[in-house]
Amino acid sequence: MSGVLLWVVSPKENANSLLSLMPRIGSPRRSKLCSRLTFSTGVLAYSGAVAHPARSSEEMVYEVVLKQAALVREQSRVKERALDLDERIETDGLTNWDLLNQAYDRCGEVCAEYAKTFYLGTLLMTPERRRAVWAIYVWCRRTDELVDGPNASYITPKALDRWEKRLTDLFEGRPYDMYDAALSDTVSKYPVDIQPFKDMVEGMRLDLRKSRYQNFDELYLYCYYVAGTVGLMSVPVMGISPESKASTETVYNAALALGIANQLTNILRDVGEDARRGRVYLPQDELAQAGLSDDDIFRGKVTDKWKMFMKGQIKRARMFFDEAEKGVSELNSASRWPVWASLLLYRQILDAIEANGYDNFTKRAYVGKAKKLVSLPVAYGKAVIGPSKLTKQLVSR
Ligand SMILES: CC(C)=CCC/C(C)=C/CC/C(C)=C/CC/C(C)=C/[C@@H]1[C@@H](COP(=O)(O)OP(=O)(O)O)[C@]1(C)CC/C=C(\C)CC/C=C(\C)CCC=C(C)C
Ligand SMILES: [Mn+2]
Image (cartoon, rainbow, N blue to C red; front, top):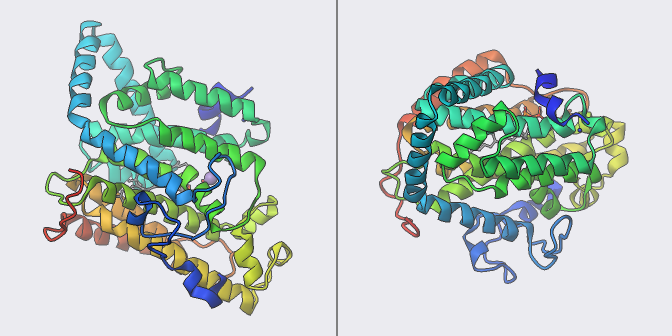
């Protein structure tokens, strides 16, 4: 399946100081925009790929959140445009419809192959939304495969530039292949902005040139690029419940938090595997504060220092999951179940790391079938509960 997906681009805490992990709302150097955020690392000097050294990653990312929220408010205008487009396709005859349907079906097949549980969850969504989520999933999966898949060693910054050019083309209605065609159709129908997609490609660029993260601010930006973006791409398609009283920004912020939580969890699960590829995603300053270094990671011995360090990292990931939970009930009813399911399942990976005695060097933490099965009805039960009638954060809708 990876071959099929890739042919088109082939030419590839410190635990002692829990305070340092806790939200620091109201830091004097934070912008007004950022004061609505729950998490801040307080580190403001990251430059990396972005030329704004004075701003923290969270401030920069939050601007994207605000832009996304503004787009949703324009939704009705976009819907009108989508209707025009549907009419145009219809006058072209049945062939375009058939091709488009086939393209979406193929996206569904890829999704079912790579993420079975998630695929099952999408079956509860309306057919329109479901296939749009599949199209986004496939684009994300293909993008990730560029640097993580079997052809990863052939992938150069130039190949990523070409991939980004294809992205712009498909957003402008010029898809390259059928998966692109499905996404092209999706972005013409839903208020999805190109920025999170471009940012995901930027995350892949980062993966090509960077294998160490000095502090959490740098890591936060990476997590946004490769996973927070997914949350921002998905919400416009999954939709916010008409009953929701929460502000659009609140919901996007929760979506962003779920992406960050998932990626932090992914990093904690894969410490050993990443180290074998010469990669250490854990913040260097926090490792040093815990009396640890890269060498300890390469050695892979579970010591008391390591356990303390891991407890802090897990605590932080859980805080992001908690932040994400606040937004799930605000989503459209049919979208809540797959999101709850993915949240509960991914969060349990953290429990599994603990159950493995914090040995993420030689053991892969996973959620067993039985636990997965139990989580699905639990997720369903949570999904039935709609938006809180008490939440009055009527800022922007
Ligand atoms: C319902 C739902 C979960 C929708 C999202 C569907 C979607 C478009 C998923 C794309 C996922 C993808 C392929 C991302 C590419 C980058 C990547 C691989 C990120 C890692 C995912 C885990 O993958 P895996 O365990 O297979 O990792 P390896 O490749 O093996 O290393 C990530 C850790 C991040 C994925 C991020 C999300 C699924 C974001 C979820 C957030 C939302 C859906 C927003 C929900 C809304 C609110 C209000 C909370
Ligand atoms: Mn990956």
